[in-house]
Length: 534
Image (cartoon, rainbow, N blue to C red; front, side):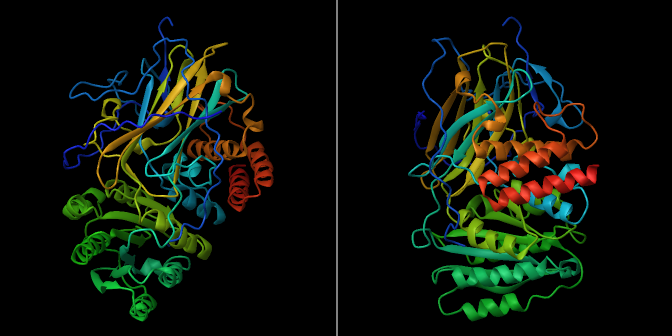
């Protein structure tokens, strides 16, 4: 089947200062109750054969939900008056709402850190487990667009729990450009050299990966190096590589751990260095490498970022956070990247570190979309309940989907974004199930664009575990994350969830069929968790 979509160009907006994301107080887990009736070469390109759904409207002409219009006041339809307590993403709250809206997120740090914890023989803290980051850690086969923006793929499969399905919304940007086509890079590396970074798998990984990355950068790229422990200092001002690579190698090679962690000073000095070395027409990034165990100076993410807000707003300098260490300040790094218009990842091996700096960093040098948001509208004539899996910290008020003053996510080439929903359809329901839309601003003109895809109940695969391999991988990742978050609390598992031991067996079968080392690693992680949980 082919995907249809509409590109909506609504005119070039006046540039306005950003406001903070508006979080819906509605639980991420939404129940829908009806009353009578959603470096620098790009080393790992994905396959191009997506599994898009038929975009035609087969709902018989009835009025199924459409994306929310801009509203200047009031609340979104179905917005809850009372915010539930506890883990909101696991609660079914009665609501007439049929819309789900969130900012795009390409972070993967949560999954990387969970793997590290399991390899060390311990379960990760439930608060560090973000299901969307587990799912988005794996290669997808979505169709990619030719230009900036996104393609939209919507598919799904029925689980073995009656009337419940997993629905997948897949967004993909164009392939990462070759190193000759991307913009020049002006990268300020802010490197933690506190005492805790002396542990194997921290500063040593960073130094190795940065050395390899420097080999691969172009002559017209620039690098600055800032270090911090109890205080911060600029080791290397913004330096064009050209014939100066030896200066960069020397700066990296001389890094040694010492004293405490004044992360706030490091970020502040890093942004000041980036502003001083700002290059017009280049992609200016601050890359923070740390275990994020701040213990000196300012330790609150919002306060740290307030100090560098001008650099973010006026110069568009964004933050790419690279976490390291067996003990890791996940919450602080996640908050810094979220509020700093950036992304996070986590590394624990030389291979991880080289992949981040040789493959993932290029995807954050060029931008294909700014302030990207997704909205999924479920059809109340076929859908009884739905639950977005993850994206706890990325929720956006439904009426702000087309409000371009509200922050979304910044996404570069070579990325995919996947959102999974658990969806309960009515007995024997048929016809239109959902419409998924993505809205973004062109990175150069700031003009808004949209693309949409639709899903019919008849397009759902009959059995999740015989559906496409990539959907099965996503399902394993989501069920695994859900299990790690719940531990012994099985009061509200995802529909169709398997016991962890069975999930490990399923993961190994999927890994064997996929012939993908990353899926092998997932299967091994599930098996370790199963052994630790007993």
